[in-house]
Amino acid sequence: MEAFLTRQCSGISERISLSNNKIDNETEDTKMLIDWISEENTVRTAQYWNDFEKEKEKVFNISDGDFKKLEGNQHLGDIYNHLVEVSDDQDIVFKEKQVLSLAAGTCWLEGRFFKDKDIKRLMAIDFSKHRIHDLALLTMKHYKLAEKVDLVYGSILDLKIKDQSQDVVLLSQAFHHINEPIRLLSEIKRVLKPNGVVIIIGEHYYNFKIKIIHIAKHFAKYFLNYKKYRDIHSFIPSYQALFPPCYEKGDIHYSSLEYHHMFMGTGFEYKHFIDKTKTIQAFVLNLNEKN
Image (cartoon, rainbow, N blue to C red; front, side, top):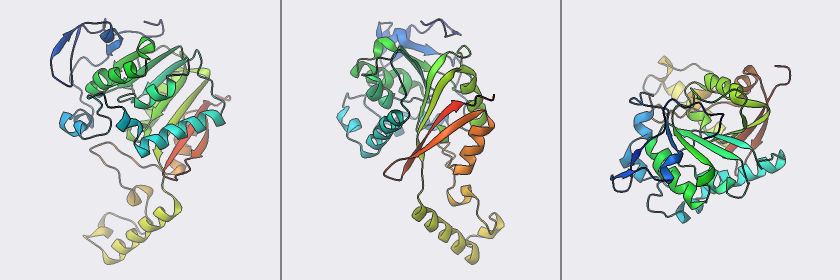
């Protein structure tokens, strides 16, 4: 284990397999599995992300070892390509770098992207135990990154990591799921090296046409007072009124102005990138030298 990690426990000695629910004794594979959460996961959205039945229906479920369906998914492919484009545009160097992936899930993007980047080490953290300890393990083995990875079941709002220890922090399809984004950004700022970089990829993006459609729907409901719409909505709609959050998933839709205030307000400078499909966006953050 690298010196930057402060353990709360010595690791784990057994795990439950997602595919057959059998308990396996500790092996070389499980030595990379770390628990930061020792009690019941009480995060509001934890039930959704730890629901085995719902997870089986998702493209991320590669318990059968079928990575072709994952790599062939159009939306996930767009995110991967956007990460390549953004990294190249910003000349981000990954060789021999310490990488931290937050809300990493099954690590599908990390495995595919970092497999040939010769990184120093990757720590991936998620609060869905079967994703990070079962599916992510399969992913890392598939992409031959297992020897360089620590898979942590834990909260990304409480990082058991030393200050200024990370070269790169990655959030893929993750930032808009965090119910305390300012707290998260403060934690990232704490663990990021002074010359480090934060990559936020796979955020929702709504083009002008989609915004106009939602604005039109808003005013139609407002003037018709559909289901007493005016009781809880103002004449000028907020961004959340146009694109309501999904509380089951913790899925929040932020406007460009909201991203700006969150990033700048926590001491980051940033660059904004919109994918060519006009459906996803990304941000690259660096610490503001004035802070």
